[in-house]
Image (cartoon, one colour):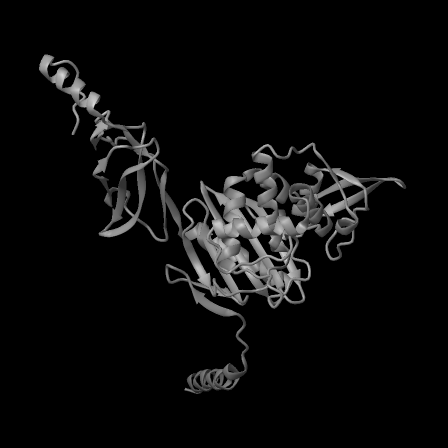
Length: 407
């Protein structure tokens, strides 16, 4: 009986202790729910997780809040650099001369000197690995003649990408301020990150390098300068592909982290985290959630037959159609691929038709919910038929020659 009494009092004691202690237990972070309802702790002011192929949002917290982006601004700078390379306006071996202005940049830098020259390849290393402001400005001047002209290009690209909560005032993110008009949002950062990592995957060969070095060649001689990646995830995260960090006293700690596993590309953006460790742990948590809970369905159109589309008053009277892009959709829970339904719809079209015009679409649904669609495009031109064309058709009909009949 005594032993039982002691157990009861011991149990009561534990309950009383918990009753008094619970009000003083500190809860850290904000627990937000993902698309599947599972919880991810995010203390940063804003965050977003998207899938790179589809662009679908898998998680969001204050995704459109306009905040100071700091050096993740350079994601757009790098995007324009890689576009110039792709368009043949630059080559990796081109020399870049450093101006007085570029060399005067403070903050993160590789201490380029006025009139020093480096290759485009080296400048990209400096920007993506060491977040060098001086290299970013030197490249902006190389491409557009001045940083101001380059910033115009950045803002034009932002509009093209649908970045509705972004405005750039410089190419580096140095001394950015919302009041001065330099701002972005977590979702907009994800959009430009997607543009860079998906269209220019070569960036990963720079953004995943942990340590490297460059050679300064100046009038004083040659000297080696070490580069260390500011993105600590490149050291240990499985499948990491990039991408960019940023921090100032105004911006706090920001990060756009990209990774790829099993054919799925994820982009996690953290903005205004309270310290540098939090931005990495919270970006990792979002990536872990995405890879654990999401999967991408892709359709290669195998087994689908696309009919020739009639063209009213056209020569030819029917034209072939083909899918203008691949279809992919991110599922945030288990799904049965056999339940995905595909419906082909053709437009009623009249001549003239140009190659590449939209003539129909493939619509995808799952359990009654539309997932998206893919446009069907004309494979050839169809000119508007004239009097002579009608006459030729009449002759062919009379002699039963050919089958190209005007609709």
